[in-house]
Image (cartoon, rainbow, N blue to C red; front, side):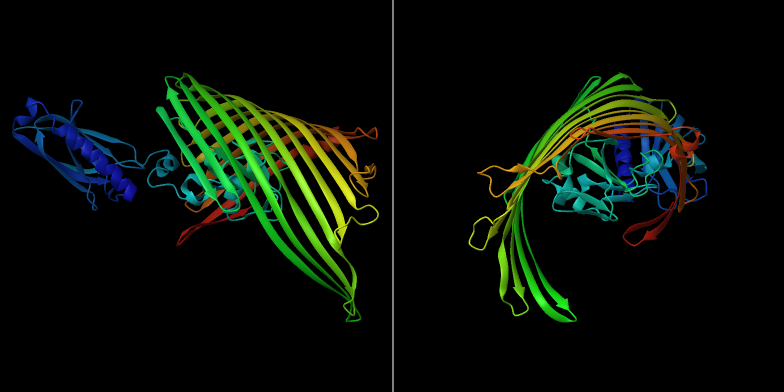
Length: 563
């Protein structure tokens, strides 16, 4: 309500400001017009802005009262136009004439129609909430949460209800691992490589519709990055420092001139995550203790991120836009964990003790390139867009485990194990999407997608007594793979709001999958292809029907989805 009143006051201010600049024609006999503004249900529309125009000049204005009444004095005589503007309603224009014989006009009950794009109008009636419920997702507006400033995407995820983040930065949703998208497209980046300052909102999709890949059964977390189209130059720089060696700096800059728009994002951050824990175990036989095992853990994990993102949009015309985006990021994550253990017998005599030390030092480098084209139409809500996204990533994760006795010497036997994990991947994704919105909150979506991914991975495990005398390769744990995957998909989805509380969406997705996995170190191969003949046609069909019910709550909304 406050935002609607502010909008109306602004309209009245502009109207009165222009009214003060009337020409000589405004100094003749003055008239008056009054009436009542109502909606289609015969209810008043309070705080609407009513302006009176003579030609192209505003000569008077007023705010509609809570009962719908309005009255405007000191109007010039002659033909005039009344214009009523209210958020959520279409603009109302009506003409009338004031004369010397009839300087006062009762305009009666004026009916103003609701805007056809109800949702679009509702979005600007008040400031966006931190969380918004939609038919198929929960939207978390990061720019409204100042507590997330200065961190990365993992810090943002920790504040979203229903999501949990472990010490390695992995996200879980209802006990499963969701797929992470950036701007609705697959990515090879990890969450700790995305600064929170670059994020506009996060969309949590617990039950993905047929628009998304069929393998997204664990849900989807879509990270939408900031992209400003405001004219001129604007920017934002943030820097922070905290305990545990936490420091970061991020900058976002936007420039729009003529038909071109540029977006630049830069950032880096560092932090340490200390932790500790313990476990106490008692071994029992027939209810009596036979032994004890105690373990105390201390660990420190360090992480560093660096990223840059550059985007360019060019308007070929008012309805056709091409866009290019290039991003690069690099992250380092490593640390040390000491596990001090002690074993005792039933009489509490020490049977063994020592320390196991785990060290790791991983790097993750990613490059993302995207080229797209978007076309809008005269019909609001109808558009189509296509884009090609290329992700190239490389991950190196060396780790070492060492076991020491109580005196600090390496244990006899295989006391040292070294693991060197490497992953190189490329992913090419082409997508074509069409959206057609109708009145009464109905929407039809359909499109195509082609996704090709190649992943080359290796795990090299060695062991020995110490790192100085040389380690022996463990052939049982070492491996190397080359995996190629191709997915062709098409979908159609229909969504509608049944009434004020119930919403529904239904659709069908078709996916053709082909995967070839070669174990390059042992000359082994495995593959599948669906469909492979008429008997497998059922495996490519993925229908989906969703019902959503909302309840008003004192501090927001509750939503229940049925699949």
